[in-house]
Image (cartoon, rainbow, N blue to C red):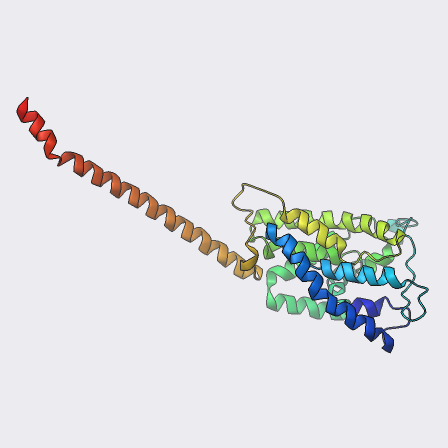
Length: 288
């Protein structure tokens, strides 16, 4: 919250008086997060960055570009996103660099070198997250987006977050959930285009609304396919640990099934022995 308030400030990032609303909005963040958690916990869903989106947009809408003390940058309506965009005007080296830059924009960095360090850290932490971050950033470029937004990475960071969330974090990683993560990243790119237009009319940034809405939709889908296992929120960890958890879950399920079958067979054998050793049957035969 504090980072984006400084970025969108028309007074610059080192405007001292901005600390007052910054601290106030930051203190509101856990309150809004707790309130939203009580709602989405009914479906065992995370709140993601919804508190951040709500509070940043509320601050920008409340102050605006003409505020005497806390003005923000003037957001122009994006009514013609694809004007004068053609393949001939495309800068291929910048397009290639926009993939790591899209990952860096998750942390507010537009430098390819900084984005490379972030990818290296993700690779050391979780190769699965690093792989899906690159795929999500590349998926965000599929639309005929404004070239400058593509080069700056602003068109791909939402898809990065969506692809990571579905590809192994909230779903256990299988090839089915991997494909689902790619579909979610493409869907998030469309959501980014639509929400950017809608929010710009209100003089507001898109923030991470596309990521939140698209990922929540994909987490709410229902499937009877056991390979698409959405993990309980209390068990969510990094993808490699989630996959280990799923294997343990399957192993315990097989063991439970094996024990049930064994107990059933044992009870049937005991019933058969009781019938064979029942003395009343022998008495009836002698009387006859």
